[in-house]
Length: 209
Image (cartoon, rainbow, N blue to C red; front, side, top):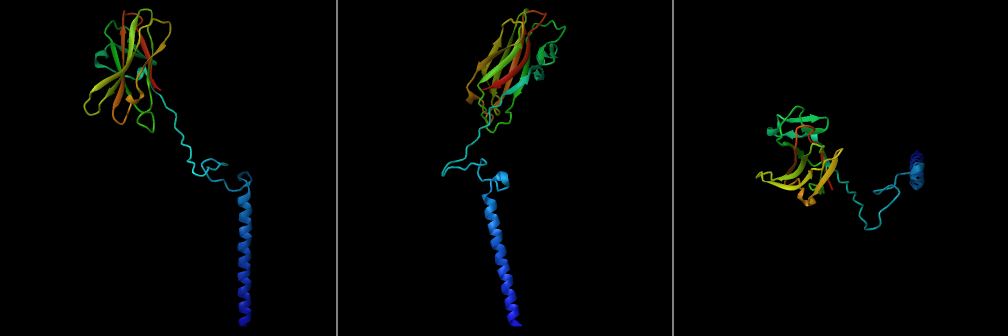
């Protein structure tokens, strides 16, 4: 009776060993298959490629995103409240206004999702139109100290060219001047017309590399 029990235990152990061996063979064959045939996906930052010994994975730098604002989204200065008008994307003098005083609009500049506080912009663009009646449109990028309120103008672009359609003008500044970790920023747009009919218009402002 004792011999039968011992023999039965040996058969169970042998069967378990055969099962483990079979599983090992299947696993070895599966790992040798390509990923397209159902095998495991290769390790590493890029499928099908491996890093050379000592090589660091490539760091993908996100593209520089511009900042932009349509002129009709600006905050109107209190001195311009009686005479301004928004028409679709435009900021200009309202219909019926006879004022020759300049209009002022301000646009808060924010960092559009960059991982760095220095987005790398170096140009301010103004899209505007000066009609045959004449006038001037200006856009100024201003840096503000968040604690003292001190303001520094970084650059100003001016459009005083009479044209049939809107044009872009630009001014340049040092990219290091834009640091959202240390300062605040806004763009001031001013319109000044030479005569009452057909006033100048601002369409948009942009900050780009």
